[in-house]
Length: 164
Figure 1 (cartoon, one colour):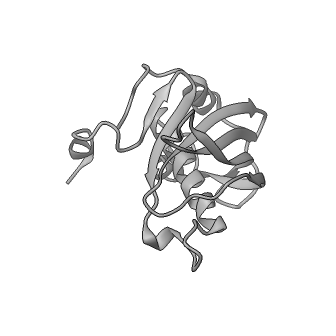
Figure 2 (cartoon, rainbow, N blue to C red; figure 1 turned 60 degrees about the vertical axis):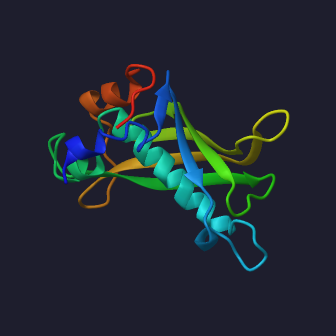
């Protein structure tokens, strides 16, 4: 199977609405703890998927980035993360991970994320909020300035509803 196969399911990587990326996540038994709620560390995994697919839909793939697409092997590493847990999710809940770029500096990129439960009676419930700062690093683990081409890809606004 190849990339063309993944295009058969346009929502596999979520979708972009302007600069907002929305990724659906279903809560499975494996995501929960002994009390039946989502184990707190699993929200980090959900948000990592959101950030990865945000980049993917902007044409930035981790594999190509690591292979030197921008002149040398590069990677994004989480530098800091501030989270607030507001309400629990439970098995079978449908969640949306919302990812929105906030600020791009020389080597850093700050992203705001929320995890929402879909379908509450009045509106979607915000379960977790996060502000995540990633740093671009080279193969030696030292920070690198975000190259202009990569910066332009991330800042672009692909066609609304884009999926991959």
